[in-house]
Length: 65
Image (cartoon, rainbow, N blue to C red):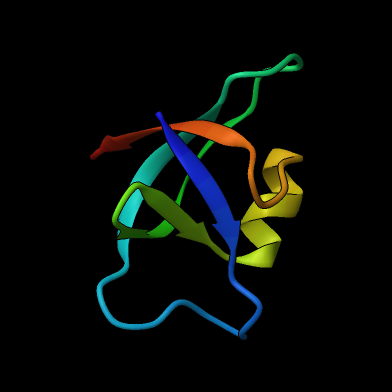
């Protein structure tokens, strides 16, 4: 489980990878998306956050593909 930070830029930078992201809240959402891990934080784009109905500070499950 990781906390989310929503990227304010147009896209993710350096080390982003496609990963499976799943929410912990109801309703359950999951999708494949670009994610960049920084320490114990998962950085996702604003579009991904909107699709998953999450915001900065929320907790998600993250899995390698």
